Image (cartoon, rainbow, N blue to C red; front, side, top):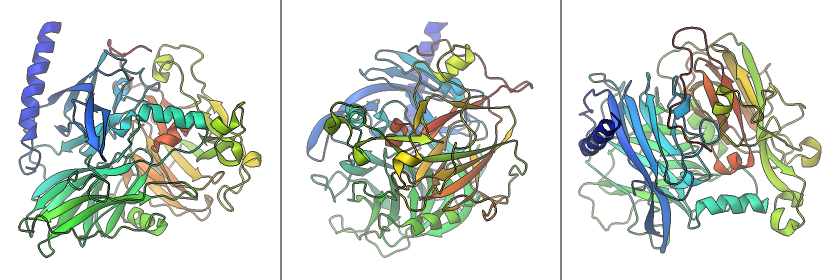
Length: 574
Ligand code: C2O
């Protein structure tokens, strides 16, 4: 039985990948309605030369970006992941709700132990009522810097898009590239107590483009036919940056955000935080030429150094002289908060929806950085944060510490000592969170360490108010919740005030990652109908490393499909 399954697995994944490659740009012929799709992921190192520098990066199947997972709504996905590197690995299927399949969600020490060198783990989940653009990425250390790829889920056969069918579709993944080993880099940054260094390059589908050293030919390009409309599946897989994206002289029409349709909204540029995806339509309606597609920084924090060179790809008309100069794209300046707000204001669910009006569990969660007192005997080495302290981050002033086995396993098997259930529903202290930032760090906050979870009853209607704090600096934080999408019912600047906050309960966007505005707040709502242990964290990895996260535990319900099944037999051990 085992042999047969292995054999079949190989043949299927081989034929499947050939079959699916052919679909890359042929959107009008969706994969036929097979219901289970197998993929074989080998975590492998690859020697690459970028920016005149050769190094080994960690990849899936020696591809960078990694292989695309194609599927249709309601398909079952089976991915066998074999770790052939010395690093710990896991894969998270970002945006996939993992209905009753929390064991396969992927965040290390939350739902599973890492897949160690030489080990295998097979992820199995169903894309229940989900379609659109997602992505997968490593969810351990900073491996995500190179271990990522798209997930494209088409509607069911015969179901059209709710907009004119594009002539072609292309995946556009924004990333950040480091010349250093990213696993070591995270450790060094944490040991220094200070900030993370900027990436050595931004990349579009792995390519930095002509603005960077030695990269004139390391550039991604889409050939376009004049008059045709293209759909770009934008994915921000950057590690520590939020990013603007624009195409020279072309408008972008947003039709989907975080794998949910939106009302069409036309704009000159978009902003995506890491973890966000967006489908945009672009019509090649300009004079024949070579146009830049550009990715630049959105940095809302003060005094943080960041990469400021745009990654460039080409949107090149058939008939344009190949060596012609590309027309420059007009990106907003790095701190253009208004440009970000404009994009957010434009995101509306396509159809009116049933937003929970009554709330059973309401949480107020501050998100921000902290400076802890130096505890080191070598402060110059280890306390490079503000005021010679060490940087940390927190939610409700609690710095999230990873346990030594996964919280899900500890919860399921009732193993003591790994986590507590006392994550507070509000900060201990309310003060002016944002004005006059940086606040007086030692007085306002000294973060406490903990692995605290908030337990939610099955079916409860949940509201979470996220409030940015300015202890070190105010900053836009892309907060991601695993296991759910949520309605973004409101957001604004300043301190959240229930008297003046305006909520959209008619057509709010349904997202999985929300950029909480710099020095502001955002409110989300969802129904806790998926039992499991779900990580909620800032998708800037440096903030996650510093502890900007918390865990929601959703209990089993009483009905038939309301209980989390047993763990899989091959679940990795720590
Ligand atoms: Cu895209 Cu917890 O991650």
